[in-house]
Every structure is written in structure tokens, then in C-alpha cells.
Image 1 (spheres, rainbow, N blue to C red):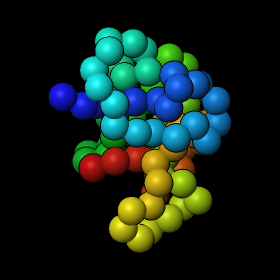
Image 2: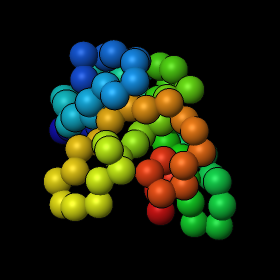
Image 3: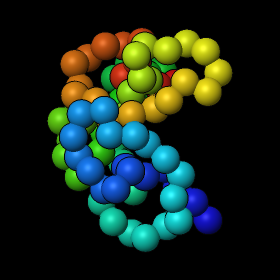
Image 4: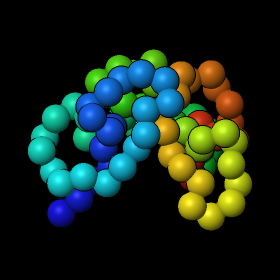
Amino acid sequence: NHVIDLYGARTERKTNINAYTINNTCAQYWKIIKKGENNYTISSTCNTKYVLDVAAAGTVNKTNLQLYTSNGTKLFHQWL
């Protein structure tokens, strides 16, 4: 079984998000916060000032996900 994981358990801006075997560290725990009717922000429990983000505001298939400073950007920090 795999879960979404902070690469190397790093909690810094632009840390890559990857799939990794479950190991029960904070790198694999996420807090889902409702921001609107159908919008949610997903923050790292290792450091809640960072959220799951679409790298470089990409909009194509296979765009990388990363950890990024929460700045309220609806398009790239909020999820359905």
C-alpha cells in the first residue's frame, strides 16, 4: 500500500510529493480544510503553513505536485 508522501520528509517550499509505502510519519499525514462549498485545502501536518500545490500552476496531465506556502490561491491550492 502507498500513500501521498513528502519526499524525504522535507517541509520546505517546492518539496516534491510522491507515492510511498506507509510508514506512519508526519510526512504522510495531511489535514483537509473545507474552504467553500466544494473546495478544500490539503495541508501537511508536519508544517501546516504548507499545502498541496500544483507546480508552476500547470494545467496539463502529469503536472507535478509539490508542497508550497499557502497563499490562498484558489486555482492551485484548493481541491474538489
